Structure formats: structure tokens, C-alpha cells
Amino acid sequence: MKTLFLLRHAKSSGKDETLLDVERPLNGRGRRASLALGGFFKREKIIPDLVLSSSATRARETTGILMDASKLKTDLRFDERIYEAGARRLLEVIRQIERSKKTVLLVGHNPGLEELLTMLTGAVEPLPTGALSKVALSSSQWADLDDKGATLEWIVRPRQLLRD
Image (tube, rainbow, N blue to C red):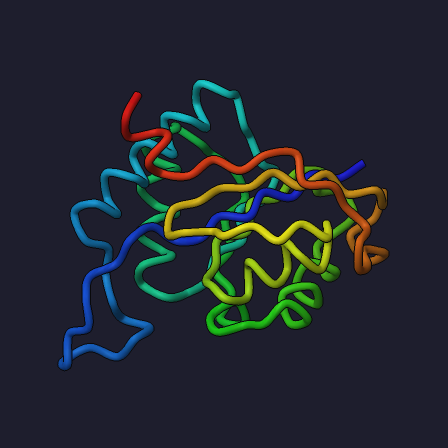
């Protein structure tokens, strides 16, 4: 069985007219949430075989802070296809993950991540910035993943972690 963690990047700065959307960095709240997520990964002993992140600045920063805070040393890849991807495109990216990877963290954006979560599990759940969900796949191969082929195990939102 495979496990997929879906993480929406943490809170980014407001619209800065001098930056393209893809270049927007995290704000203070986003950095704090990313640190809290790193602590959560460490406490819960979540160790993905692969971290697959959007190449957008806010996703890169979320990923970097989380990995530093959790002391996570694993295969890390940035994929431009994740930025602005809908559910079908994200599914295509996931299906290309090599068979040897059992647990994957996908760091991306809405609305694509919420659409993917619904497509895979049937669950309609909001994923605010910094939300992490754990999805158990019924397939033993990424390439075989299809609609409703997974179960939502849990969702952790930043406000839950920041009040601890």
C-alpha cells in the first residue's frame, strides 16, 4: 500500500505588484506554520521516501522550512507542473512516481489539491494554507492510482499546530 501526504503551501505574502504570483514568498504566519509542520513531522515520525514540491517560491519555502525543522533528509524534487495544476494534472504527476517510493509528500496549491483530495477519496474538505492531509491508497503502484482509489485518514490544519 502507498501513502500520499498532500500539503498546501503555507500562508504567503499579499499581492506585491512587483512580483509574479509564482514568486510570492511566505509571510511570517506562513513561516511559523511551516516550522510547526516540521515539528509535527518529527513528532509523528513522518518520513516520506520522496518530497515532490511545486517550484513556486512559497511552496519551496514551505518545503525547505518543514524539512529543516523536522531534520528530514530524503529525496526532494521540485516540479513546475505542480504550480497551477488541476486534479487531473496532479494525478498524472503522481502516476509517474517510481514504484520503489512508498510514502510521498506532495506540496502544492489550491484549488488543485482540494480537487485531487476529492477525486481520490470522495471527501470534500477545505485545505487552507498550510493544511496537511494523509491519504492511504488502495493501489500498490502509483501508476494504477485512479478516482476514488484512496481513503482520507486525517487532515491537520495550521491553527491546530500553532496552538499547541
